[in-house]
Image (tube, rainbow, N blue to C red):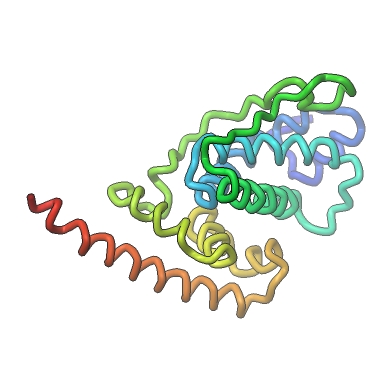
Length: 206
């Protein structure tokens, strides 16, 4: 069976039959977009990598009971969003200097215990986010200031290029709410960036 040509559903079925290499293909297939999303939510390469690794560890350990009520992509994206939320709030409470390691004692033999997942190299670096490389720093700074639900929705739409329907499914809300958050978020982001640019004009001219 050619795993690269298989659907996510077929890969999950193979995994359940004992072909654990099928999970490697799921990592290869989804890690880049998940990393981009996590970076958009956290503004930190290290935190984004940690969240994606943790998400795949959790997915691996839970995949045997995966029922397919949602697609694998939606399911693991929800895991990433939830972990990113937790990490974001943890960082705000404790400060950015605290970095939790994913390395654990290998006592149970479970996947990911005592080692880190080797994620594929991401072809799209964070400075390509929202396709404005020259203002990436400003954009990430402004994104971080947005309300959580609006930030998540914008990242899904503009970084991961999710449809309105897929965003609604992932965040468990209706399409009207998604469109409203995106419209509001775009306006807020635009105003924030304009204020930053106006503030920086004297320094840049100097």
